[in-house]
Image (cartoon, rainbow, N blue to C red; front, side, top):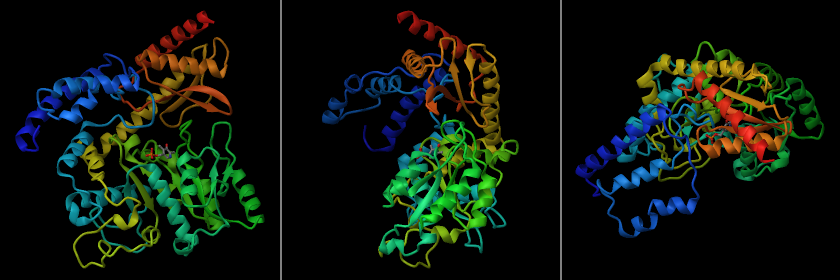
Length: 484
Ligand SMILES: *Cc1c(COP(=O)(O)O)cnc(C)c1O
């Protein structure tokens, strides 16, 4: 394949045909969701060494390669994919990826991709508006308005969390950029905070001991009453609280922390309030579901992944701030070759992110919204949330199954109890289900008890698929028992 338009056209036609068949068979639930082979076998099947040594991938030879590649994928579009919290992507997002891949406009510097830079800023305004932090008169108002919110897209929620916590540090200790982080700073985070929170704190040089856990209930939701006592205890030891972190929603159970109550606490004690809404902030788009996020506007910072519940391929995440100035004070560096005080056109996002080169990730979210409209996006979120509650009913009413809670989002935990609730047994069921490849599910532990776990990311997942899953679990469980 040559680097020219002719070969681009030929090879993309071949690949496109394959992808259309892939999408169709996946969406129809034909074939397996996943069939895992050992790594060495996949490397051999793909003829990796031969290809890089000899080159020559062209519109003919790509056929075999792409068939083998697609055969060894996780089929996200399969209605029986119910695994991790990553989007079953809308094809519109894939088109945006394709365009970016061909033209490559790393738009963190406006000049390197004006159209993509404008789309990112526009999408950030749209998200700020959903939170209640946008003060402009229309979404294309890009001025630095007094008391307006601010935000930037990042390659993932983990980087977004690091960015938000860095802003919290700059707020309480502006000198830390030059002198290092003062040793008396800590954060209060629910015991169930995503690991990227603790990881960020270590990266920031504060050490794991600076993450003070706030007690959660048996369903991993923060106990707001524990917040005050934890805060007081920390203050007694002479520490300063840099931030309070809340989950919207929690990874394990998909339940939302009481955001409004926590916000009230943070206002009263004048502490930076950070909400990790990587998965669940998308409910803001739905009038029916946004009540779950009541009080979100009380936060100082928020992260929100589009590549979880807004149907964009990985990655596209946002870190948003109530006050844009807190974002602008985070990274206090100047590099003369880029950070010139400019009278030039547009805006660079590079001063506000960890990344230097950055993909045109905002275009992916834009394409999905442009295809579906806000209403279509809301419907998708409402469907996956309400389907999950319906699946809860179905599973929980079966005498041999038990669900520990009514889901708020699209995450559902349960056990098969016919042969007891032994942790290893639940895990064995999960592993055998995945090995068979008809369904893809995960598992999690709540208070040292193991549960099977579904994340209903696919709006094609229906009751019939859940009924089939129940049957498969029973079959698998009997199979494991018969071997004992
Ligand atoms: C997924 C997730 C993250 C991490 O986001 P990535 O985009 O995977 O880096 C952080 N917090 C929560 C609550 C999450 O669900």
